[in-house]
Structure formats: C-alpha cells, structure tokens
Length: 393
Image (tube, rainbow, N blue to C red; front, side, top):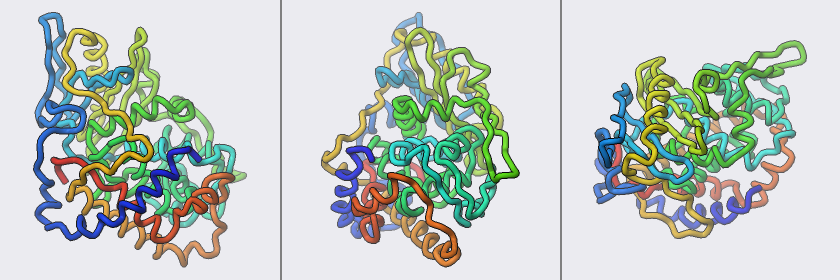
C-alpha cells in the first residue's frame, strides 16, 4: 500500500462534514457550476474555444481536428502547448480506465488472484468474458483492461480493493490527489453513468501520472496477449490502440467510445527526448487516433516555438489542506456514491455464495486503514469534491 493512501483516507473522512452543505446546495447551482475566476493550470485554460499562442512566425499552425475538447502537453515540463475547451465537462468513455488502472495498480499485488463476482460478470458488454466464481490473476486483468478495454475486468479489479464502493473511493481519491477536479468517476470502466464526467485537461493529468508507473506502461504497451477465461477457454487480447503500431515513437494510450460520449482518446509519444500527451473528447467515431497523430505531429514541430498556454499542475501532497469545493462536483459525487452504495447493497445477496476476491496485500490492508462503513462513504464523497469553479454537467 502506498504511503499516501492512509493520510488521504483520513483526510477524506475529515472532509465528510462538508458533504451535507454541498448536497443541500440549490439544484440550479449544481447544474450550472459556481462562478469564479481562473482555471486550474492557468487563466488562459478557462477558455472554451481553441487556445494557442504561436509566439513567433516560425510556429506551425495548429491543425483542425473534429473534437469538442483536446489538450496537447509536454509530459516532462508540464507545459500545455495548445488546447480546446480544456476544462469543459464531457463523458470519458473507456479513457476512464486509465484512472482506474493508475489508482489500483499501486494497491493490488499483480500475482494475486481475484474471484469474479456476478456483479463483474454481468456488466454489459463484458468484453473479456469473466465467469462468476472463477479466479483471475490481477496482472491478467490489468492487461485485459488496457488492451481490449475489458469492462468486466474493471469491475473485478475495483472490487479487489475490498468492495466496489471502496474501489470507487480509491479511484476518486486519486483524481483529487492529481487535482483532476473536473473528474467524477461512477463506473470504473467508463460506461455512461449519471454524474460521471471528466475534461481533456484532467485526462492529461491522469496520462502524465500513468507515464510515471512502469507497471502501467507494461500493461498498456502490450500488443498481443492471451487471457485464460477458464481451463478450457482463452481469449486473444489485441491492443485497440493502433497508435502503438502506426506512429513512430508511440508509447501508450487508450481508446474510448460510447454513443453518448462519442470517441475519446489518450495518446502518448516520445521523440528526441520529448514526451507529449494528447487527449481528445467527443470526437466522431473512428477519427480519434488520426486526430491524435495530427496533434502529436504539430506538438513535436511546435515544441520551443510556441508560448505555452498553461501548465499541468502537480499532485497534491499528503496532508495538504482541502481545496475550495465546487457545489456541482460535490452534488454529482454525492449522487455517485449513493448509486454505488445502492448497487452494492442490491448485489450483496447475489454475491453471498461467491468467494470473496483474494488479493494478497490489498483489501486486508485497506480494511485495517479504516476504509469501511461510514469511512468509505466519507472518502468517496470527501475526495469527490472539487475546486473547479466552472464546468458543464
């Protein structure tokens, strides 16, 4: 268990006292967001249109891409080279699985096994096809999660934190830790859910953290693998991120799609010592990877020739004071936590005959840290607050 987990868990419980006031905020405020100056990462990033500062005549022109929002940033320096509606709220689709992965990889033993529950196996679409009562290796589940976007693997891994609710609290805690304050996670697989949203800026923060985790990159870069569903059945895992095999310097990323979210994408590439992140939200189907390539090409050509329009902020250190909260995010988080708790209660009877997921170091340690009962709910709600002052529901 990482050192930051217990201090932030304790802070979440302490922050629970703020929940009642936030949930009681007027519905109109929750729908529109509270007004306020600036934006995380820089004042220019509060804009909703295309944001770029060419700086000199040598700078190449930003290509037009069909996305409602995007960010292109230097992962090393944190400089945001260009953006469009970077803090606008959109549905994440399966790009949210990157947040799920970076939240749970530090907590779960990759060699441990997780027993798939009915809740995990009944998600639609399941993708990898987990079977209830069967045990699966944690590392295999992460590989399935990030290569073929396995929705059932996402739920199984989340439950491996002790329960679905505890896992979702961990995921939202990581978003708060990264200052990804436009993000509220309700479903760990990114399938559409009321109150769930993210921004292109937050996706860049999440991708930057993913680059710091060697285990994430190992799973995410896997081009092909085999997943053992049962003793008699295996599934081929062919990575959906075509950037890996079609773009020189590609080092990772994640594709997402739902009919409501449109196409969403995170792409990462490195050339000549420079690592760039591109994130896109709400794109036309099957355009996201080509749009990412165009923005990456521009970013590598524009590096050092354009004036940055903002920065990717650093993570909050353990024990840091609570940020100013947004009523919109607080209300969405409260609803998300309530839905997760209701789903957990409804599924309890169905799971009674199924063995508890087994993870060598994760759930037992989390339980001793106090992530149970009211503490879990407090963590989910406390960390799901935001200091965002503007956004779209």
